[in-house]
Image (tube, rainbow, N blue to C red):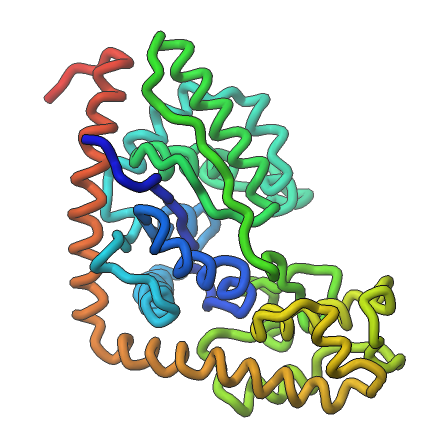
Amino acid sequence: MIRSMPRIFSGVQPSGGATLGNYLGAFRNWVALQSEFECIWCVVDLHAITQWQEPAALSAQTREMTAVLMACGIDPQRHILFAQSHVRAHAQLAWILNCVARVGWLSRMTQFKEKAGKDRENASVGLYAYPVLMTADILAYHATHVPVGDDQRQHLELANDIVQKFNHDYGVEFFPAIHPLILGPAARVMSLRDGTKKMSKTNPSDQSRINLNDDADTIALKIRRAKTDAAPLPSEEGGLVGRPEARNLVGIYAALAGAEPADVLREHGGKGFGAFKDALAALLVETVGPIARETNRLLADPAEIDAVLRAGAARAAAIADPIVAEVERLVGLLAV
């Protein structure tokens, strides 16, 4: 069957809450892509357990992330939304691809080095092999496009190495090349406490981020406390050089307003940060407020979320299972 639109796969871990960085760097762009691509969206709970998770919290966070995605505009009727562990093809294909990927390739992955830190001997094998499971996530659907941040480019390069080696080793052109989609004017939202570090849901300080379930008072307080320097906001972009916190706040405002940083500076530059922070907080409340309200409405009925995930998993498996069955045939595994 010939697809009328190219197919996208992307996923998000359910560990921790969703942040403004997730929204501006990913979710908002995912929603826009739904008119151009056949989309498969996944809450990647198997990736989450590469580092220990409290079981009850992981279950709750999987539902919460599903609700957040729907509240942001992900459409589980037109597209597919499911939990990774509900489709066994991911784990089945990951094992086969583990036998194709080379140890040397994985040893060069910078994200493993960053997450494992100095105590790499105590990191889980799952964390080390994370990029292979990510490759399986994509290839189980023959997806050709993946919206990612710059920090995932290396993993997609590895995925394409695996594609090429599998096709070469088995003399086929079975798996397609994977193309990264780097999208959006605010693909990298930084911490409110340190403008040189990415905004992260795993940062121990809740003051470092805007959560998509923060209320108006919390958002206003966090922006008021956001780190800045003593100089006024510049009137031109050149004045942001060497001022990462100022650049971050201006970038967030520009992304929310659909404007360029230069436009923001022309309107707000030359003044102290007080009035600008008030305007930024108001814009954030306008954006995050409806998402938080819809998320809470969905979470009030967990059965509705579970039904969405079940339906999505059935549709996802209908695509992935035949592809993985063919992979098993190609490598010589007997059919059941």
